[in-house]
Image (tube, rainbow, N blue to C red; front, side):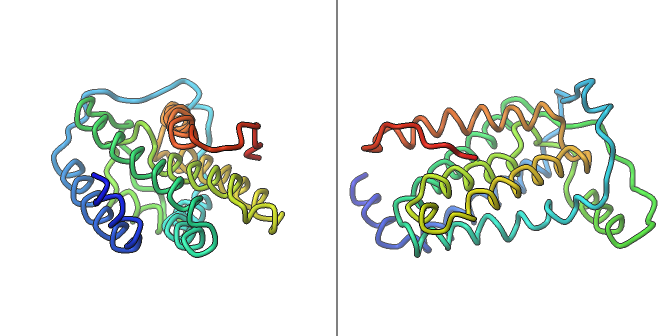
Length: 214
């Protein structure tokens, strides 16, 4: 086990590549095979309006997450490993939950194409089935990145990082529910899982004082 840890620390990019391959293979398998037995729905969801413009932060997530990992990798290696730990463990736990408790949101209908944003939403609906939603991986990974940024040494040198990260976190959370990809329940479950992982990942940090994450 120690040799594996040393190898991963010596080759972080290779580690991320192998993990990504394993994760997406498992996720694709679940997407193709899982039949939801538990529909995640809440009365609050009925009051949340649909807004196609939130497809922008939803898709930006695919740049933000790897971008943050590489940024921390070269600027604060310790923060990188803590973000990676929260993300990778959290994502695998999500896949396990999806397999043991197959869940999804109510089926979505294509939206009327009034603009390019609606077209992008329809592409999203076509490629991302309404299954495997709780907890939300979109929210989990974004929150893990936000915590890692706020607790990194870089945050003190670049004051704008924290508020910008917080804004993007809020936008992603809103995007998941306003595009009807997730229920508000999925968002809360992701927060609970990340905060539990934060206690585990940061338990050996020397400074025990509370560090704000907003």
